[in-house]
Image 1: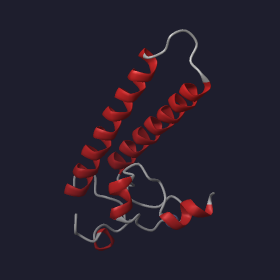
Image 2: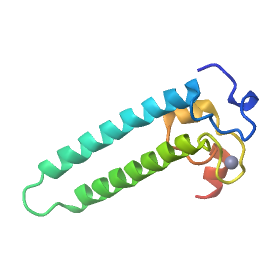
Image 3: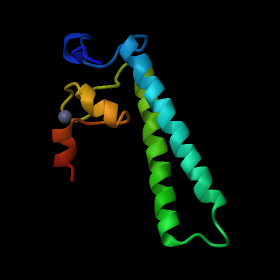
Length: 112
Ligand SMILES: [Zn+2]
């Protein structure tokens, strides 16, 4: 992806039918499959009660899955790729690494 997302769209979001949205959707669906596979492995690896580490890992995977679903919803309504806090476009490089990111790096760091 080399196109500057800042030049297209008025809201800064990805147009739902655009090539960028399609690409993001594919990335998200791949992430989703990976997380579900990891979750399945965790659930089947348990003998008796799961330990704390497994529970924490499972919870974090479920949290990520929810974020992925939320991102897929944003793709559908055209708000994907816009920072939730400052409303500026989230850099493409960040979305390639974390396709379900809700915020730009600056806003995310401010929350920690
Ligand atoms: Zn921001």
